[in-house]
Structures are given as C-alpha cells and as structure tokens.
Length: 285
Image 1 (cartoon, helix red, strand yellow):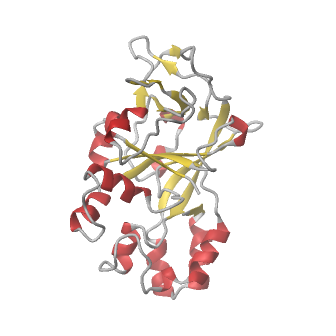
Image 2 (tube, one colour; image 1 turned 30 degrees about the vertical axis):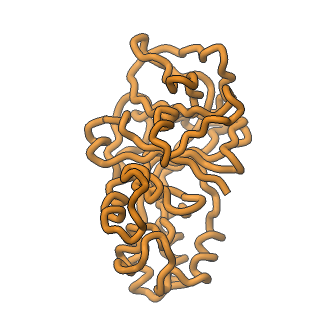
Image 3 (cartoon, helix red, strand yellow; image 1 turned 135 degrees about the vertical axis):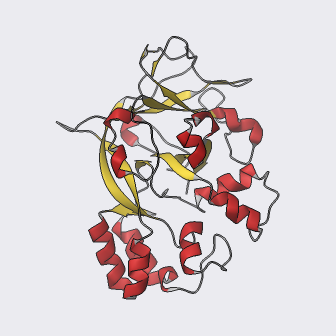
C-alpha cells in the first residue's frame, strides 16, 4: 500500500488514528528493500532487463508449447541488506525473474494465477556464478537498467488479511470494516503519502487491486472456495511477498495498464530455497 521510514509512518498514523490504534498499526509495518533506478555513485545490487548470468548447466526458462520467457530482473543477494528484512533470503547467489510477456504471441497467452496451465509462464531462479547468456533469437531483451537498494517500512491496506486479523478478525475477507484504519481520511492520507507501487523485495506488497495474497491463495485452492471459507483465510496467511516489479519507462517495461508483476512464496519453501514453488500474479489499474 505504501512505504517510508517507520518514524514518518508513525507520525502519519498518530495524526489520523487514536493513539492505541496508531501504535498497533505501526506494529504491523514490515521492512522491505525498495529497488530504485541507480544513478551516479549509487551502489548497484541488480538490474531490470538486459541479459541474465546463467551457469552452463541451467537452461533458459521456457513455457512448453509457447516459447522462452523474457528476462525481467536480477538481484544480487550478497548485496542486499538481508539482515534488515523479516524474510529468510539467501545471503549469496543471484535471484533471476522470468515472465512470458506476450511478445511472442502478441499477448494471446496470459500468465494468470487462476490458470494452472499458465503457471510455467513465470519463473524464479536462484543461481551462483555463470556467464551472461544471450537471449533466444525470438526475444527482444528489455533495456538494462541498474538498480540500487534502500531499506524502508511498508504498510498494507486495512483489508489485507494480516491487518484485518489484528483489528477486526471477524470482518469479511478483503473488505472494509468498521474501524478507524478503514476511515476514508486515514486511507487518503496514506495514499497521498506514497502511491507508487515501485520495485521491491520482501515487505507488504503494494497491490493495485485486491491483496495479491488472496489471489494466490484462491489459485492454490483451485478457485473453489468462497471468501468466507476459513480455508481461504488460512491459506492467505501462508504467503509472503518475494518480489514485485512495477512498470518502468526507462526499461521499456509496461505490464498491462501501468501494472505490476508479483512473486510470492511460502516461508518454508523460501527457507528450503525452493524458488520453483514461488507463485506469480500480476495486476493493473
């Protein structure tokens, strides 16, 4: 929903919420690594686009029957301030993100969380070493854009399941409820504070529509559970944001109508480095 320093977000909450609710809301903030376009002497921890470095024994990811995936971003785990995060990222190696972006079929085949057959259209690899790999001939790589990192605190929308559980656990999933955190004045203040999705590792996702955790949980449960089914709420709580990548003009990346790409993962799979089990979804306005 938004990001900033813990002090600035606490001041914002105290301006618009009762003090006890403000402190409780601040306690639900989560740290994230915000990825910004690097300029000048900024330290570079990864990049959007360009070409990935892949070990010789790792194939370029493909979606069978559709073709190779486009390379979206790389993040150097050893350069990330992982000690400041609350997720168990590897301390070494590189995370590589790939996505079937439609350039091979003019967007005919969509990668959607609710379509299990499309899941191979988005991949995360964790690799060590390797050399720059030329893209498959049919793909046009995105412009390479270096990224720098900055730790920030992130806030989720009040109808995010984790926030709802703290303030109104009996309220319907994904909907506003009767509490000061859902009052329009506070929502407007938070959105005005920072309305940018941005690129990010960890923390609360900045969802453009409903919380992305709900989309992924519905998909994992085959989409046959209602929003008042306790199984859905339980499954939602199993997923953490691994990374989000916004549309980015300087990299010539546009996801739908100024949308964003999201990869989520279960904590146990992250601890076991099972990045092949990460789930993907995307949203746009």
